[in-house]
Length: 86
Image 1 (tube, one colour):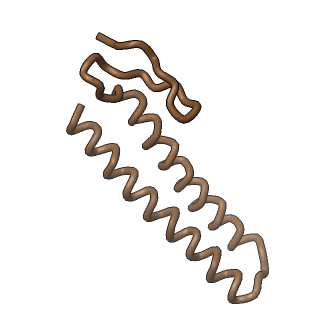
Image 2 (tube, helix red, strand yellow):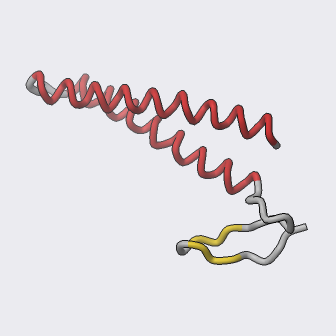
């Protein structure tokens, strides 16, 4: 059974009667993080293929792509943890 929705930091969060946040809310947040990681991986890779930057800029973009892959891995673990918990 759901309690009323309460505004928190400008967001509507649905809570269960026991005070825990619903699965859909947590899953949605993990999905947003996962999508940002995917955008960094794809965008950085395409940028590296289509441009002729100096070495320093290429290292920065490579670090962005690496951060994207790490974000993908961690959000994948988050999806697994959510599946196990709920």
